[in-house]
Amino acid sequence: MKRVSLAITAVLGLMFSLLCSPAHAATIAVPAVPPNVLRAAEDLKTAHPALSVSPTLTFNRPGPGGSTRKPSAAADEITCTAQAQYPHQSTGTPSAVDGKAASFCTAPIADIRAQAELYRYLDGYGFSLVGIGSLSYALNSAGPVTSYGLDLCQGRPAYYVLRGIHNYSAPPGYTPPTITLNTQTPPVLVDC
Image: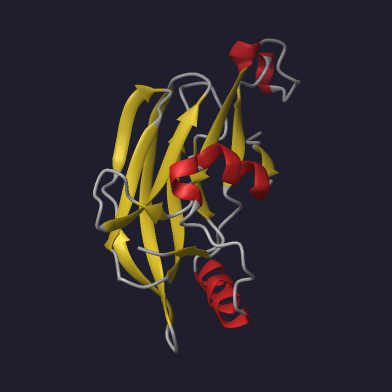
């Protein structure tokens, strides 16, 4: 029987401290996000269902006879994580805003993929897609695979959201055979 165990972890404060270096901290605004920006982010999440910033999933190897016994060894379970990291002013390309989507697992899987989509808030229109990262993938790998969405700096503060599209294919003998996770950051104000 196909079974996947999703453990969604949405500790945004922790993710902020883990995913944004001190150099990027100035690009993330502390003031409250305006209600119209929050509504637009929720509309985007509704149009393209997304989970938290960093959900995890587990591939299981069924027991003898196909039973769904609890894995007895670490080799019977592979945990994979999908991350959408907060958009920020790029350090590699000074006049750009970037966001990163990453996929990785605790052991090699048949196919692992990540693609980033960067959205900028346009007053009166909501969030508009401004940067699509390349589809990054690896075969028979634990990752990480990473995709970057980029936009040019606007010369004024702008709200951004990063969506990550993550695809995982289990190795032979594990279930489920494939799964896709979508992640999305909350709106972030970037000033560059």
